[in-house]
Length: 62
Image (cartoon, rainbow, N blue to C red; front, side):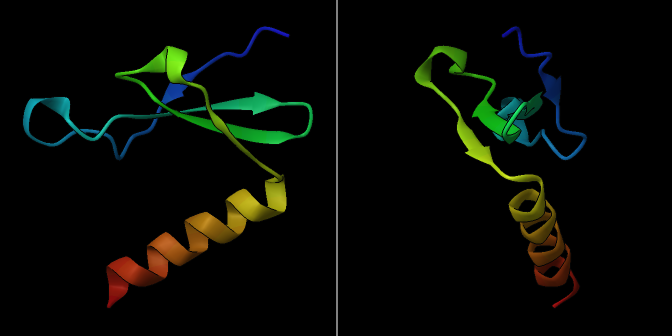
């Protein structure tokens, strides 16, 4: 399966040091470090990914 990776809109920082890419897989959503794409990826279910995003939003509001 070919994954279409998309850089997160929240990636950046000094020298683009915080680079995350996401891609859609049959079992869910894949995440990887765009600076090291050959190092593998983390796969989350759609529900887990939604929960992760919600947690990040809540942490930013604190």
